Image (cartoon, rainbow, N blue to C red; front, side, top):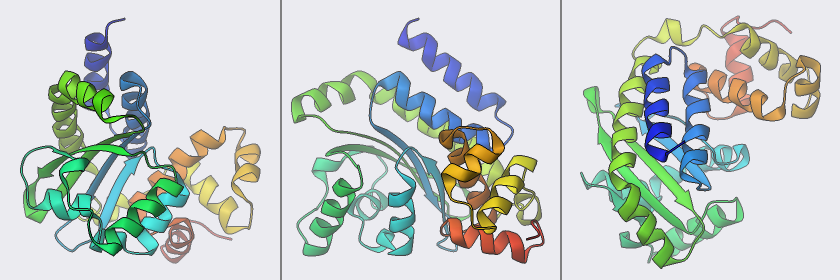
Length: 239
């Protein structure tokens, strides 16, 4: 199957997506079609709250949020000032904070090459669609030249669909967890680790991650522990 056909399939999946879980699966599909390490969709609403989905490790996602890296992330800072896609090499990484942030990112599996597409939506929404990989500069330049149009198209399709699930737009609906998300949150609240939860639910740890990240998104939580606490607080799970 040609890449163009696979791209059409992904766009079709985005059109048909009716739950946040679908977006998490789609970013993995995009990653596989383009044969890169990571794909991330990350946005900030008018209140400064962050949401998103991607293929970075949960450890890096939690660390990024807990250390409030958005304040010093050169990708976010640089793209906020721009309207066109940005290759990470064009951004300012000269400060000590930026270099330390980059080193930490690499240690958590973030590649040395990145390409981010800034998107602006209603009510102050600012989003980034990012592809990330480990390669030499020449290979990456050829990749961007070949795929930039497709990536821009995907970015805007993803943003349009994601706005339908924005927690601040429909706060009550955003707290309605699926049965599987409730099961996962309940077991985590009971002290099970991820492997034990996946085994108890007879699912893979990859599928479990989809449920956990989806629940975290709906609950507007900073990390998994915060998501469990908010689920209990909202009366969505009972332990």
